[in-house]
Length: 478
Ligand code: BG6
Image (cartoon, rainbow, N blue to C red):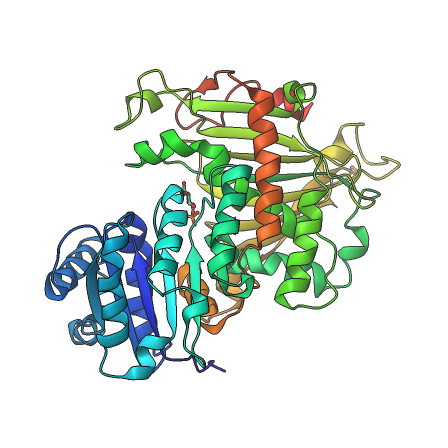
């Protein structure tokens, strides 16, 4: 059943950003097309250039037509959506610019109910978040200024801060203006159907969870590989690097989902309690352990990308061996690998079980050849496979690995929503289950900061484009 959402105004800071063009406007347009948005809504783009509402609408249309012509199936529907789009010029750091936004929000709409519920979306670089929040507060647009009966919420894009200290500062600033229940730290991975399914797979089936522990599992590998490079995001990558861009959030969230304890119930906080607890149990990498635990890489050709320094030491690849110091996982290695310009685009989690105690069928190595695995493929195929050994037909008792497979596409016919569709709706509805809580953000940064500190000034190892990363990755798997 579709939830009836409160009327609201969505205010997008960074209205000209790549994220807004590629994800936010197309998702909002499609939600409108499918009738998922509230009866009354407005979307206000906020950016530095001076544009009229009409010019802004044309820009959004132009971008969508060039990026997603197939999405713009219905021009008449776009015209209806477009009539709800408005624009306010604000230099984010200039306090004096915010009253214009306040005026548009309070007086710009004919329907009073539309403007009093406000959802701010910060599609801006992390360093701008604190100043925007302070300025919103100063302009009387913070949550505590909301008139009774209306709400104000804020969605903040990843990376949330750029290390533990800046994340804490940001948490403090935002916490002074919005209550934690109204802060939505987005990691779009959590909006993916297959990521949400990890917990369903684990906790709605009786047969896996009893085996999901150090007694039965040899190791877990998590791979987030992309065949493409940094695209046109040189400036961002030079600031962020892969550890901040992907490890701190997407990779650690996958790790938390696959390794967390069962929550007491499926409420947002019960689930997030368990994730936070898991992240807190990850053993920190230290200068002593870093050698056998972390390999950073940079693809050949990265330094010639646009807006990248010719002697850049930024990593575009990381492979990390994590351990989780708790009763369930003690000493089970979690190999987490992510990188740009790798051999394939694939995100998957492979849980490899221990070999049987006796090997009857073939040479000693063969039991590892057929070691049982659960393979949760997040993308591009959305599948779950279970690997086991089966007798090869013929006289001899020889085992071969075979797979039982579930595929979303063949088992379900409903069209799934994309992460941004889902997460935008969740934020409007106030459901925080798939957003990251303050404590988890901080635990994740502590993990990444420790790695960065332990690695120090080491230059990442170079790797050929479309390979599986630097050669020394094999040493951490040893
Ligand atoms: C983003 C990262 O958060 O996620 C990108 O900034 C990465 O570097 C992207 O490519 C991957 O997301 P998806 O959903 O396209 O796999």
